[in-house]
Image (cartoon, rainbow, N blue to C red; front, side):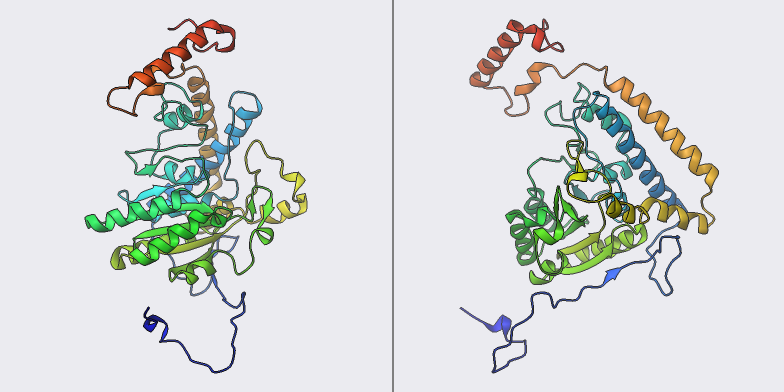
Length: 393
């Protein structure tokens, strides 16, 4: 086995260990919380039109999360996951891409879909698993996807999208297309084996994929310092030989700048990039979680002042591109639209039971048809347990 690849490092003749925390990784920050750019900061490619679109996406995202949590608490929705305090990571990342780029999400990146124009009706249909759902009601809420918008459908198992993103990006490379794949995941997902397999494969095969880690401090109830040692997730990118950057994930301009540069590099060099965005999950992990059991109100209050939406709002006002009157009107408009969409979506029928066995084979097999017949017989036998479907077969 050749060892030539290691011969460019220094040679010593006494045991020399590298300290496990010795890698120093700077954090890119362009905006302070007052919306003022730091001196000599390298701004992203952004104009008023793009800035306005980004802010509208952030505002809609915040309103959607607020309304959907309220709907779940009212018993109208079974489950929901917010991105409160982390909206800049998904929206800013999507804004730094091109429409032809593939987005592979975890389950807190609805902001990427919103930025790309995913219709409110489609969002609601998925959340309520009704007949209008693009996924035909087969998934739990917040598992969005859109072929038209190049957004791969979310799947529940943690980190499976990471090696999938590497494979998809490698396919883009072989086809010679002007496109990359971005893969979102949390720092908790980086504890899965799929993370290591995906990054190593991308590095070795030189796939044009952007790994975007939202380091929000918690893997459900487990804080980062109980998940891993070492210098966060960025140090792992260095270990795999991947170009890596750490950014302030609550700074929309830093997110946009890093993603724009990462995409340009991935396209030009056909190589992967790792972005670690430092943020904080202000909300609960999901509507099934109570964060008071593992963190303090004081800790949450500290991070309230780092709100990414407020930071961008301040910057827009400083640019003379925004004002309080437009702010109030925008949020009121979105609240009305989301509430109206909820009222419509929750009344739409569920997908027909026959769709359970479609999209697997061109023609459903005899075995699948027999299983479907058994399900229909069961539903008709116990109609009180299936009020949405009883008597329809």
